[in-house]
Length: 148
Image (cartoon, rainbow, N blue to C red; front, side, top):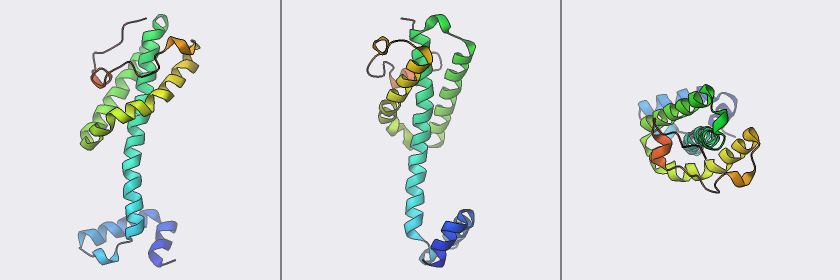
């Protein structure tokens, strides 16, 4: 194990700071390329995970709003608003995530459905098999589904 790997394993923040300095000064030959690639890939996945996690909460609350209308509350509305604000913020900061949205919604729906089932106690057949909301509806600050 070379000293770069050792520093990476023992002092990650120090490793980052050193790499920033090397990049700024053009000392590319010093870079720990293997770990740098690994960290960049993980950063991209982390952004997608955040998008999916926020979509899970948003979709679950929209499902509850629609299919358990008698229980609608200010906290559900607040959660819907908050998730939309954070998703839109994330998309503004990382515009390339927009192309990940369709897949992220598909990935998030199963967990959102599971959450809605657990929180409502309603039978599974109550809810659609696929996400009933378009991307436009999910991100539209004024969209709240009509009760079923």
